[in-house]
Length: 209
Image 1 (cartoon, helix red, strand yellow):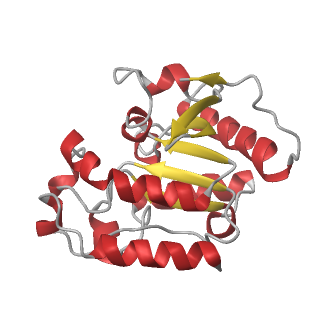
Image 2 (image 1 turned 60 degrees about the vertical axis):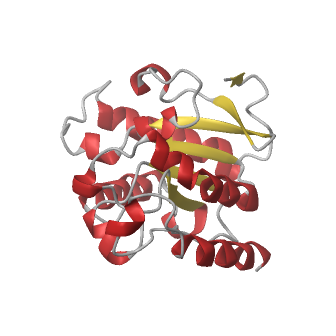
Image 3 (image 1 turned 180 degrees about the horizontal axis):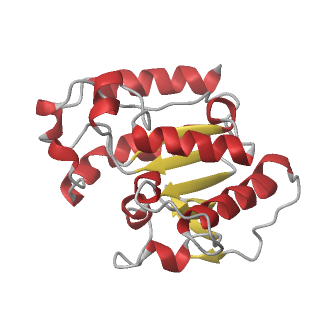
């Protein structure tokens, strides 16, 4: 229960944070979801939406429900295998993309969560999460999704992969070969096979970015 205890302390500090304008409009701080004692992977999304703001949990709206379905189909347990967080802990008004300033104000909480979790790998869910850590801020997620690369956070290197955000998949219903939904299936299958069951290190040839 060591991880949970450390995260509880961090969450208490986060819930009292008023460092940026988002603190003035939030209903709830959306800190995390998942079991920190069993999770092997950290999944980072963009920002809370309306339902997340109301419930205090990430990925519970329509996009989150679709993510749940893809995870279930891939055999990945949301509650046991993933620790889910966002680049910011409070909902931006009208669900806009969080600003660089807002993300910077939340960065210490985000990186502390990653430090405590020390995951086997990090999953960047959507372009906003990816660009928060990828050095090329103009990178298109379609160019790197499904590929393993290494990211350095607080002096520690983690294997990482970017996947499409489920809100994008809500607008793309095709399951044809090469479609976003089919690629999502393939990427989650890759993540499962490499990190949940393999004991070998499949990332020794990953690219450091």
